[in-house]
Length: 605
Image (tube, rainbow, N blue to C red; front, side, top):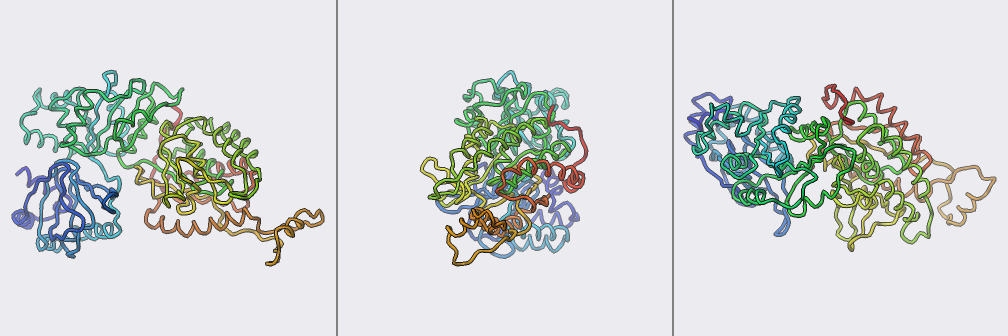
């Protein structure tokens, strides 16, 4: 009866009448898949469909013998293997159990019968088929359970989870469960040794709440093991001031996870305040396999709300395009968003957008905008220095110094706001996503506009502007945890403005003489830098349309900046001011499009 009740509540069964449901249940077969074991292998022939009612699965695309890609995860109540069952196609991905999972196996005929009997089920199936044919498993599928594990005794897990629960309530129903809370609610006794009874109790909580936060004990015991076994995600809580080496307790948990749970591990580093920037975060990664980390200042509501948005699928990600100096308009728009109540939880960019994103990710208070903009404006005005054009038009020396100055010696992983940027490896012929390491190096690589700024050389690689193949990396936002995405485009909506055309037979010397002629007041069009940039923008725009088609954005911002030139360094501050005013004029409309309710500004608390 317990299993029947669970299955009846799954999306594919909840609208079936009892007669059809019982008939399908009798014909189907319940199967158990242990953590780490494969349900389906890519390339296999199979004619069964499966419905997951307990546990979690992961879809993996095996590219070759050495390379694979995680496509996404399958949550309770979802179907898997449906294309093979209906169309007889080979499995297009390997499906692995993230944790011990129970599924109902249906034959081809039984699954087709299910589709015929229930219209809503058929519609769900069609949506699934569309996503599968695009290989678009949701990268960060909804999670319903999270296990929080303390890494030190001085971390108040209970207090932290109480604050987090309050923040989550804005987005979904939530329940915080610790061994003490559960013991109290069960009148002093937790059936830890009665596995089926305990499972039924916990599933009841999971059914009644969208998200259950399991608080593990700070020692290895049956309750901690239970929390791990039921978690869609595992989050470690640590005091940032403690030593980063793994503890004996942590090693015991990790050993258990090998056979118990392969869910992603994340890290929350708690800081006393935001007066000092985080440091040495990378040391926490050296002996751990972490998929994500969060810097959270104690008693800072904004930081807690950011984690709440990530856990509920409401995190807001912003992707910034390149655009030369025009990218400065993005900083003004971001300031308007920050002041107007649109939070930014993750930000990334390409070329000029990488520079703006890296600057914004360092800001913890709106009051910091003006000094950061002024500092950047002063430095980059001095960076426009021509050189012998063997690899680029401009010298990399002053440009690199300017980037180092505005990066303040910080590492990407030490930033309060999650940041990434894109460059292109000419050696490996691949896009490079910068997620860790010196901030200045990542920005310098991403802003190395081919032919204008020298490439960035490191570790035998040659990195240039990633905008050549991904002008606005919106496709990365969902992969990195964003539930809502914003694209801010800084390119011109029109082509170049023509001045006096030159002859197709003209040489560089003749054009130079025309420019030096004091009596010639006509503009010569186009300049070499403008020619290179405009050609890149047009090419990357065409590629970007494909990316937007596969990864649609929730808000598309393209301010009217045609009057500004991409190489005019003197227009930087003016662009920031223009972007700020433009953002303020649009902010309420944007919030409505994003579905953001008004709330107190918590960015500077």
